[in-house]
Image (cartoon, rainbow, N blue to C red; front, side, top):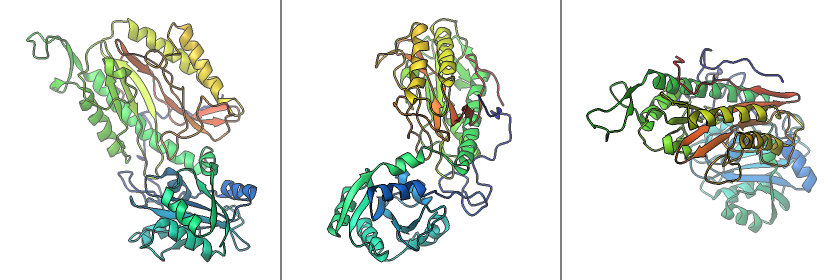
Length: 435
């Protein structure tokens, strides 16, 4: 299988900043204006319109709508705006897929919309009107005054009502979600950048754990239980999370509230973001999922234990390592996605862990797509074939609230003959200094 060389924590990182110079360091806005600025290929949307004999397509949302972010490349405000696509004799027949595309820019964002929008025209008229009304007006501007209009399933109800009142028949489509599953080279570039920053965050966490000491707590200051100490105090999941997040910020990406750090029982909580004391021998599960300047995510998970005793945590770690390898062996274009999950589950079952429980053992799917959403298609439990250009996590894990949790996760792009890592990070249950 073709694999990308490890860039882990040793390669110089640009921190997710766009080389074109337009991105912001905290990852909150898109990177624009340079030779590698992102565009959007509207050809799949054009194909969906043609197949449905539809007159146009409308998406309405705000900055939290990832379909809209992908369609427009516009990082707008938290109030509604609209994207409209229509076919016509004067529509772009190249990368635009034969569509003319319009962004109905929200008030006070005209200049930003013109800088960032990946399509043809920015419409500023009627900015005091609801987004659905403005979308209907944009359709009429293009000579589309009736007929079927495709919309994402997530379109706000009021926007759909406004379109229907204007005389359009509204029909939902998953064309955008499907198109997002196959990444372009520009998108893969963004994903690699933010993944490198995620690996930096993981390296910081592992280094802190490697530097930590075990305190037997002879004076009972911590309730009589031994604790892990670092830099003059008891090391907690929150202290470790802050170290990770500071590193992410220094490399130009946002943690986006996604940094999971659990220890012991809380390592069995799949998305733990609270505070818990880290104790010797317990598993410490760290899942780092930052968002970069153009909205793309990274995703990596490793599990460590300070001063492990070689019991459950060692057995679980070895089983998850084997499941990860078994899953990766199945990843390639043309493979049914659920096969990847099934191979991981079979390996974990062979090691004596449950795979049919919601509480202990392997309790989740082995992976999911990643792009401008942290979780998007394809799912590795779906009965659909993987395609070259899909970007997915591979993340088997086992959990027991009485013992802890172990998960190992990597981000890969599917190729015709296998996969490439979008960044690699080493494996070790016992933490080592990586900085």
